[in-house]
Image 1 (tube, rainbow, N blue to C red):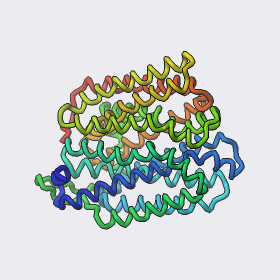
Image 2 (cartoon, helix red, strand yellow):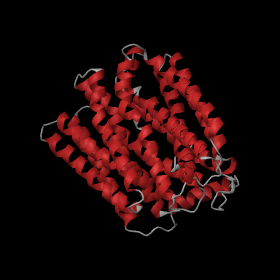
Image 3 (cartoon, rainbow, N blue to C red):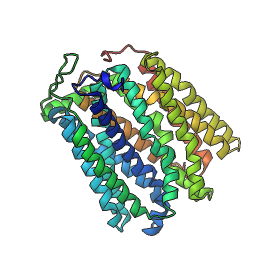
Image 4 (cartoon, rainbow, N blue to C red):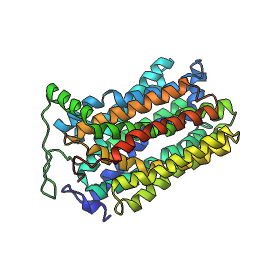
Length: 416
């Protein structure tokens, strides 16, 4: 509870605790909408009588929804506040999940996946800035690591849970369950979520609403596009995440469709990878107040690059699945350390309103992930483990250049 007593907002530690847990719950549900459903995608395409190539398309539609409206959500939250925007986002996500069971066409299904993905945009543009504004740097990074572990219960247990639920429920019932949980989360946020915009914080600072003018919005986005440090961090964040996100989208094809594993085996093979991600977040929670952000990112690159090199070398040598999973687990451990640190460093690369900065950060990084994942699918990464290993490693190789440029520069803006 002592961590939550250090909030910069004039709220009780109890309210801060519930508020953070509810943010994590909504993030968890946005992952659940992908991870628990992914084992069901082969049932979806079979039920809707379409080819298996639609399996990764559903994930790409979800990611595209996540990036489509961040440009607008960010400035709106800077003007009208984080609280009303997040409540709108949770409501829209819940509604889209509740409608999905009633459709019978794959393209309507992809359209609803797109709408559900918009909820991911609210996580990136509203939830993350709220944490950064409500707590100082060390507490914010530690909280993002702790809450990420809660949210990562979905990719850790989601595939296995989804596989078990499919033994007794249909894929349509899964969406109903996610929608109902989102409704409950909305009521919790309505009760406990404070506002950070227009509120005088305990350190005397005040985050004033930003006027909503199209010219100023375009000017802010133009400034961010010209901000080399911001763009380097955003591109690196997207590129370095591609192997993990692509694995979520392609592993049903690689493990179930190609290798013939059943849904339970598919779920069990996910545990080491997302267990590694959680372990990395636990290390970050310990190290956040002992190292600078750039030092944490450099530390994380060792397992990120080392794990992918192990996966690549052993997979090409013919060891296949038993080499791919440990390599991905080591890479995921590094991502657990890197993700929150790189996000914080990039968010404070500009003095613009954090809703606008988070929107552009999310648009660039998620668009990079979406395009990269689509490219991996086109290149055949879902047809063999070797092709996946090569393509995934190449994406992180591309990330090393902007990361190197980012880490060799001194911050232009103090990271508070």
